[in-house]
Amino acid sequence: MIEIPVLTFHDGITKARQILRDDRFREIYVTGIKKDLLGYVDITDALRVTATKSNVTVEGFVKDAACAGPEASIESVAKVMREFRTDSAAIIDETRHILGGVFLSDLFPVIISRNELSGRVSTHMSKQITAADPADSLQQVYAKIMETGFTAFPVVKKKRLVGLISRRDLIRSGGVRSAIAQNSTRTVGDLMTQEVVTVSCGAPLSAAARLMVDNDVSRLPVIDGEALVGIIDRHDVLAGLA
Image 1: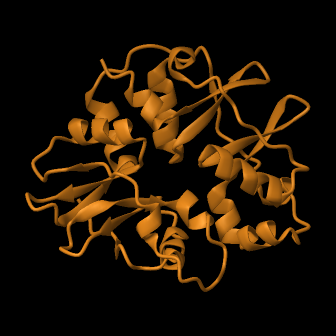
Image 2 (image 1 turned 30 degrees about the vertical axis):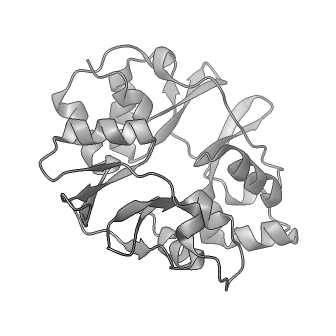
């Protein structure tokens, strides 16, 4: 358990966006009048308000949060995260006061080292792929983020995987406001990561887990030969726990 940033329900969404620029955080927990856990906001919420200064508060964006008590096992906390599809969980006491937080990225290596994973990538991956093109504008990427809520998109050219573009890439580059204003000349090809770690659809689930740990990534494009056939993330891998 570590100390995590916490907002009150009347804090501004722009404050949330400033915190979420840090690679470490994908969710920020929000407390109420009694400093009890209300829920969380994530990067997608922060992208919804693009003004540098805004009176909009986080209250209208709060979603139910993954949480657990301090005595909970690592596996049970990871299960809660999987149910909520979040990358962290708040650790709370009996009054729902936040004691700290845990990250799936920290728990994941421990879980796969002491539990057996069954199945192959093909049986646990998502076959529904939302992809981007290198020539896509930042406005188009922003629209994909808002429509799907996904954290990143494989970049495909002529049916071949050529990169990966994430919503964090947009935030880091300052491309969000220009995308909304539709005055950016940059494209996906300008911002995408070109060296992408992939996994074969026929690989065992344990191989995908090891690639995620070794390369510190949360999701992997799945390929069959040179064709992109799916996406698998940490939550998908943990669904294969024996």
